[in-house]
Length: 101
Image (cartoon, rainbow, N blue to C red; front, side, top):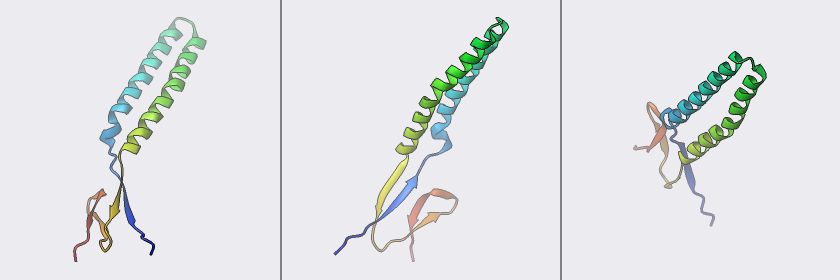
């Protein structure tokens, strides 16, 4: 006989989990723009644009890697016992509890 099991797939990621990553990236972009403004004042607009482009180009892969690995670390997959149904807890989409009749 085929043993079919049901699985519960839940993502427990919250904004607080990626908040630090976002702040670090915003600081990086701000410093990049500040250096670009400094180079603009030195009459080197080509270097200024290249600096901003290079910082954004080099920092985006690291930001995406950090987001994806954080997301993967917050995915839960668990077996649901046969005969129990799962329903969402009101007000919290990421948590589920067994139905009691």
